[in-house]
Length: 209
Image (cartoon, rainbow, N blue to C red):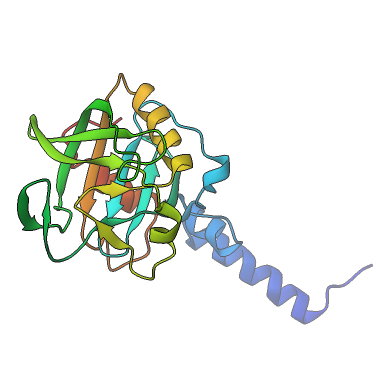
């Protein structure tokens, strides 16, 4: 007859006791499974836009996030407004990108291919239904701007690479030619994850899934 070593019997008894007193989710976590709020980020190269997505910008760290309405998110660097007074197109103002909820409803092609990138695409942002001078676009020198440590370099708009702009345009198209956008200064003191991003996306002026 086979007898368990006392230490083996102790280990089995401990496992059974833990299984009885721990909730299933906690037990799964203890064995290395990922909790929903800890879901791994999707690399931008593998990201696919879908209906209900939102675009969130942290204007403190200058990181952009696209978040699905159900599960999943991705991130990438962005450029936001210079945190100082500037003079631009006849106006003098503080170029800091405002913190607010936005929607986008217009896409323009500008002839200034330095300010707006090689294709001149400008996605205008609206706030509370009113058109604003702010928007999302690329820039002729976007690579230089992205290489800076702090990435505060625009006149107030959110600047992205041409590749990210294409993803945002795809997101815009899959959401009936509109896009929910939220700019926030410092997303959270805790780790950024899907649950944090989803809660912020729900503040936008366009209802999320």
